[in-house]
Each structure stands twice: as structure tokens, then as C-alpha cells.
Length: 96
Image (tube, rainbow, N blue to C red):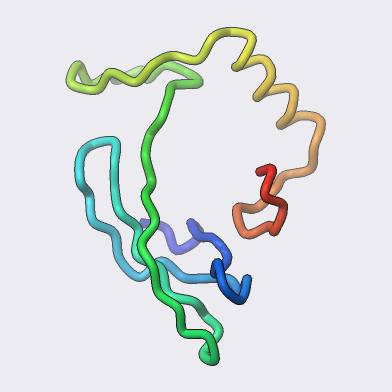
């Protein structure tokens, strides 16, 4: 798993690092994090889940049944991506 995936520490807001991942299913995994702030040292588990489809796969797995977003939702996602600068999941803005 990419070390670029991450989130800030919920306690000190310092960037945290992915330490390991445990796959629970094809669409669900636990991601283990460690805060990069040595004074904090918090470690925790986050849940990462494939929730819905924006664009269908060219190689669909018949065992996977993710709901497909309504066209208006997809258009809203594309509009938001075009109107705002690229954001990082490390940003402090909770509206991301």
C-alpha cells in the first residue's frame, strides 16, 4: 500500500504514517497508523472501505457489488474537482 495514503493524528494533527494494512474483504481493510510526532506517539486503526462506484470498471469482478452513484452525484464530484485546487487527505479541513 502506498505510504502516501494517510491522515493527520487525531490528537496532535501531525502527519501520520501507514505502518501496515490488514485486508478484511475485497472492499474493506484496516489501516494501521503511527503518528510521526515522537512526543505524541499515538497509533491507531482506521477503516478504509470501497463505498460506491463513480466510474464502472473495465474489468468488473462479479463478486463485487458496489452501488453506482447517480449521474447528478457524479457530475457534482467532477464539478467540485474542477473548481477547487487539488487537496490532500492530510489537509485539516474536515469538509474533505
